[in-house]
Length: 330
Image 1 (cartoon, rainbow, N blue to C red):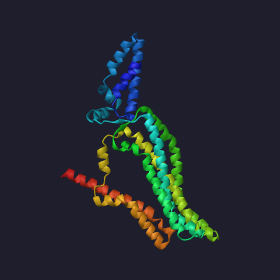
Image 2: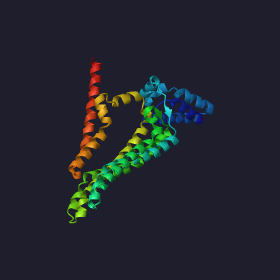
Image 3: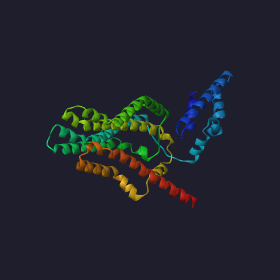
Image 4: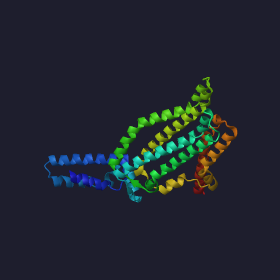
């Protein structure tokens, strides 16, 4: 029986370990074992039974259609993709480092959002005027450092994006379990994050009703605390979920160059603007906020900017697709 399993492994070697392939492999193993058991009951020796099983089921191309993987066989036959094997230990280490990277990135973004609240805190406790801006820029600086650190954690794993890789069935089962376990966490964190962002105005309203000037001046602090915490939870939850999805799709990634090309914006002006987009928005936000001191209003620049960036990217990606379609028609 061990000979049959080893032969089965050799048959499926080189195929992407997708759910479809794994189901076909399991189904074929069951068929081979059933046939082997039947032959043994009929009085065949072990070697005779193994030989007949391999003779009946040993050519994967002949039974690929029955197993539902004929398209995958053909694709693998004509598409030569050299894949880097990602071991289970490497995968486990990557998940640990990726989680740390996501936490640092989410915390960095949260600090950049919350930094403006230091002006309000310093005004409320009557500190000298230079304390507010100083603490704000320190908080923003620490946030940027955290975001930079988040990249350093996964620098050695850049090959996951740059080249085709593969993971074995044990790693796939492990990832599926981790993804299932994270589903409830994702739902809770995303829900809390969305609610905090939606109801960020509540502290402002509640504190305004309290007839204490110090408390009233902290309403804006509560607003930014809600937003920063909500964004932290959303970034963490969605980045972790995306990590599991990307890893589970590792064996499906075939043409990396084509994927990267489709996601690329070719317009040089648009690309240059998007590269420094958030730096520009930060400058605009701080300039307007310092000129008007309407911190409780100017925060709206951030969600508007996020929507604008999505629209800009969609316009130029769609334009590229239209240009490519026009060239094909010509």
